[in-house]
Length: 128
Image 1 (tube, one colour):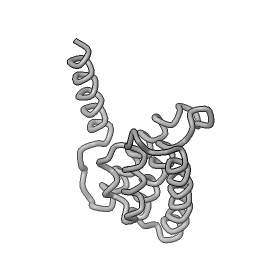
Image 2: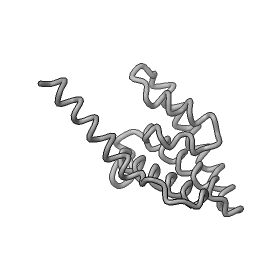
Image 3: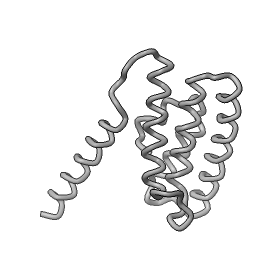
Image 4: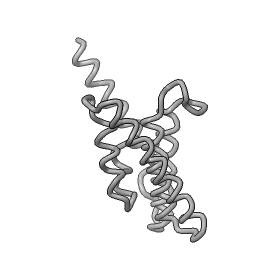
């Protein structure tokens, strides 16, 4: 999940989950607890956004879904794998937030493209 969508969720626990998911020093236990918490937040926000039709809650749901995908084991991933699920959920979170704000904010797919390009350029420089 791109760190750029974490602020779209009102739930501060998701920021901690993102920190754990991003840490190379996180223990298996921390990763599992974070995955379960992300799933719990996902279920809670899905219920709220569905009942109220609230685009802000919908964005929070997709942020939680992206966080859960980032922490999912590879062998249990949904079609496309966890990285694909996280990317799609991040895009949906950004889209929901844009609808809520009534604007056409820069697309999440464009941001992801730039993040990947920067990462690949950095890796290429490091290996050269």
